[in-house]
Length: 289
Image 1: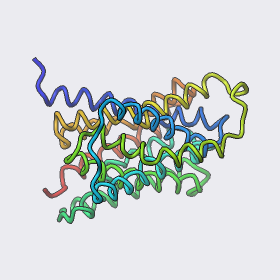
Image 2: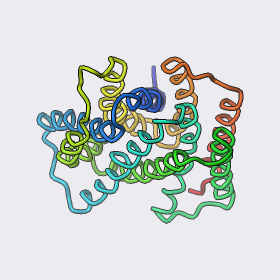
Image 3: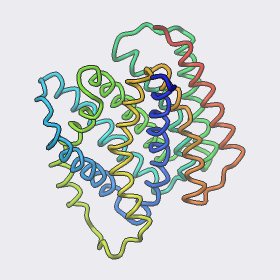
């Protein structure tokens, strides 16, 4: 018989598997679609789904404090992360982005200790610096001899997601995880619909099926449904245990890039992915409670 922890790990893995394919599908979508349209369009698609859910669930109204924290969360996971990733994937391979984003769990922990005034150990800060230097080194070596503007976009994406994850996690203590992501998408839906229409600079008939499927995947799974499994898994198994599943995300991105984009899995990519994995695990173990 499965325990709550086992079920939580399974649900968390399903969510991470969906997130792990975000970069390959984004790269396919922005190859034909305006990256700004992809950003706001995927959020609008997720928002329409969230609004449909609210029609049946009829959630409670938000307090002023919850509204403020949802605004911060939306800036991170609805706008900051998707926009920076969409722009970066115009030129960078998804494998490159996946390894840089592999440090996200560690950056999320750093933002958490600053946001909630924890007192982490010196070892934790050392691993945070080590992880940062590691992804900067990889980005420089795997690029044209230095950091490109797209790499800086990925760094901003990591910080945006870390802020959004922390605010969303805190809100999940007061309402269900489905309500948290749904509110963020519903509140921003009018803005996203307007901006998606503004950047609708193409004929749908001219867009290939892979690009359309990729866009739909981003709107339904990366922007919305993936959070159901991710937050539900954390609720069942606990953030400490289920959060470890996120360490698999860079490798899932590498595999996704291989099958969806025919990107080669190089020894360098695997080596740096393993190093990032080791640093993130060390950071989680040295973080003070």
